[in-house]
Image (cartoon, rainbow, N blue to C red; front, side, top):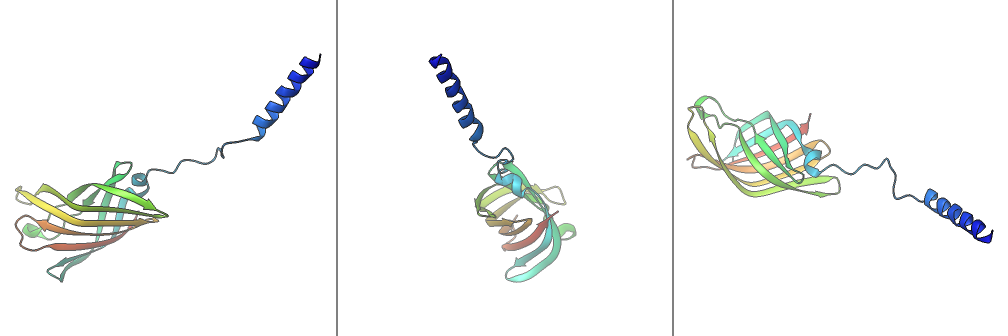
Length: 162
């Protein structure tokens, strides 16, 4: 009889302890990967400087797509007119880091090729890429060397995600 009462008391105590403890709220969802948090279309002001002179100041849309949980690809829109157009190009695998509510991305150098208006393959090198995301805004800077152009183009883009 004592063993039966002791067993019942032990089961009741165990049920009380397990029933009142919890690991965490069931409503807490894990934070989305940083690339998911910033992926989207950003529209805003793009300023392009060529040899320290403002060459372009326009509203443009940049696409930021998730490459992995911790990196993104940035699609830069075309720029210029007619045969002087620099086609849209991609900077791939920009690694991201998060500090507080700010997510940053940096790449020292990235190179690729695109086809121009004549269908010719042109090389491009993008350097000093720096992105800073906060809320639904992005500020990005980079330098571009396109084809055989003898000068460097420096771009600053400030946009808001749609």
